[in-house]
Length: 324
Ligand SMILES: [Zn+2]
Image 1: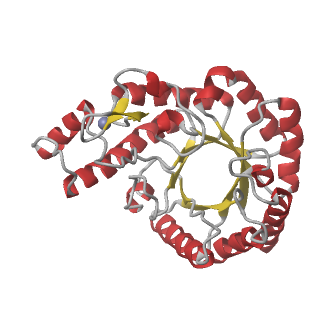
Image 2 (image 1 turned 180 degrees about the horizontal axis):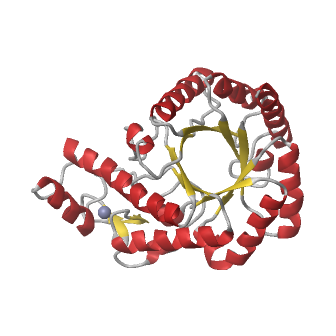
């Protein structure tokens, strides 16, 4: 049984040490460290130290390109989007504040990110919710690289109005990008997990999850259906856990589900423990939770009662670890 938690917001090894022990005491055997652009620029060696501390207490380590290029999930801001000619372009020709995964400069940048993730000593690359920019009026991306690629594939120029072919092209672009970076990671000796957005997400992403599970260098397929405040929370979690379980099994991969430990309303804390139980009942043996200590340190998404959420997760993890 694998149980884990994400960790961010503190880069002081003195306190990391204390928190990693707390994480182990909450029955976790892995930790996900976010490795945003800011961390990479200013904390590279500190991150190495943080990964080392995590390993020393017995935790497996995931490294997450949190918010990198505004292509992945996460609140972290991106600097690379200020580079000329690297961003997505919408169907009206406007430049968007997110990098394009078909842009060779960004692909290069991501390979360098993987090099540094390897340098920190992490075990698993966590490809967190890769998606295209969600344009309000129109669609993306119609940059010169996307147009070139589209023309190569369909022997016609890329339409200005979104159609079935564009949708398929976009999905295949994400898959192609993931193939590149997971292969690059594998060559450096790192495994890869891909976390796909749940179906209801408005961000253009991957709809056919089998394409992810089928990839040679993807070891773990995950999803993160949050929105625990909704009344259908248990049926949704059950549905997604079952879907991940089936697809993972079909392609002989590991299935992983993420549990919401942020923005949990007062009185809803029990849902955290319940979610862990539902996921386990559906056959999943790799569970992660977002984020440490009920995300008490990030006011934007902090739970109403973070301590209680963190305790409920501990109880849930204890329950599933005992059952294994
Ligand atoms: Zn593009």
